[in-house]
Amino acid sequence: MKNTQKKLKAKHFRYLSKDVVKNPMIYIRDFYRYETNIIYWMNHIQLFVNAATVPEMTDRNFAENGYHCKQMIKQIEAAYVFFYQCQLPIQEAPLDFFSTKEDYHNYLFKLEFTTNGHIAPADTISKFFSYQSLQKWYETMDDIMHYLTVPDSGNYEYFGDQIIAIRELLIRLAFALHYIYEDEGISLNVPSYVKAINDEPHQSTEKKTKLRQFIEQSIDKKYAQKEAQENSNEIDENQSLETSEVSASENSDLKR
Image 1 (cartoon, helix red, strand yellow):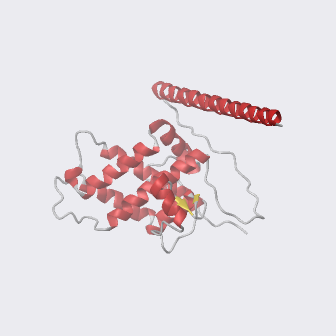
Image 2 (image 1 turned 30 degrees about the vertical axis):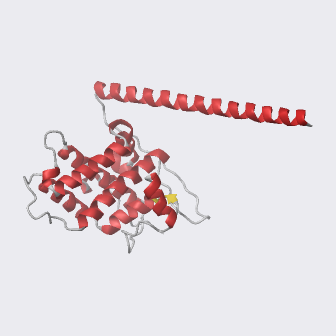
Image 3 (image 1 turned 45 degrees about the vertical axis):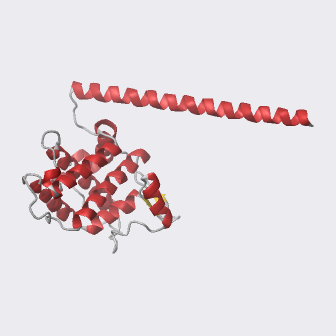
């Protein structure tokens, strides 16, 4: 059967390049490895949405609202590529975040966003675009950016109660993309008889400045040092455990 699904193109988006439309992992890896970490990014999202809701809460001396708004839209667009290409379903109750008690406890005590006890970024992306379409998300982000230019909030009712859902969904989306970054891809539930045939991942064709290359090499070096230290600690722990087991075994033999 012929697949009639239309291909996404860069012209369908505001900010995504052709490379990222072909492989959204290019943007996700670049953002979470070289630009920020998930905790910093979550805090930026919260401050951004708070300031749009109550302009008096913004700090125009430090906040980079234009940059943050653009990055949030790029995240929404990258998530839409997953949503569209993976044909994720529309959900009837996109704000039902806690399927089980375990999901509630993971959120409350671990700051983990799970579905039925498991990290499931595909479900989060599905909920995000079930709440409203890509076009509606564009309108929402434009409204938020507009209200950031207003000197005072007046009646504090720009978005009403909806702003709570908007902020929660933006934060959950940020975590979903971070989970995809950590897992180096998105996992989907398919029938047991389905075998995946992966295409060769599209690589970025963008030319980077020497300064950018230097920054990325420095960050990569730090990651490599951290991973080497973690591996060394793991080896030491395993050796210590083996030594303890041998000592326990020898003591047991002496008691006999």
